[in-house]
Image: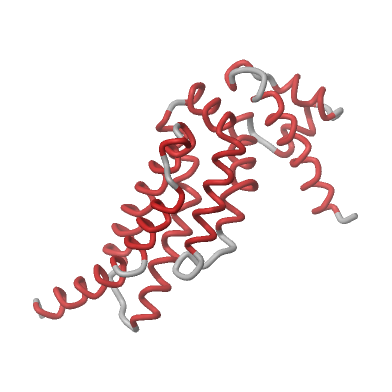
Length: 197
């Protein structure tokens, strides 16, 4: 086993311990001592991999949801992405709700926003390439920010109230805002810029 694999396995063990503890108590009540005791590692090992428990929580979210979503091309496989998110919400709502109760909506949203920013930028750039157009960096940044905030906010709502979201309906809604709407917005921006030349 390589060093990289050993590091990953250690992080995964710490993550699994945190996940188990979050099913039993509030996030704010969990200590590093409890986590390392469950993993049979020392405190130095924990702090070698993570700055604090919040950093471990962020890594856990990234590994379990964000990194999987990044494997998909959102412009093509949005149905699979949405299904994946719904499945994750159904199976892990207690984790996100535990983090929400302890950290608050804004902190939790920042976790999601940091990682979804890369996803939305890929989505916008793919649309630009497909349309063979180019928008300014500041407009792309604005558009990515808008999509990121929307996705992150919706995800938190979904985790908190999974029974209120109909998977088929949400898939259709996401389809509408990605497939026809994004190209239309990019095209409108380019036309508007050309009119002002």
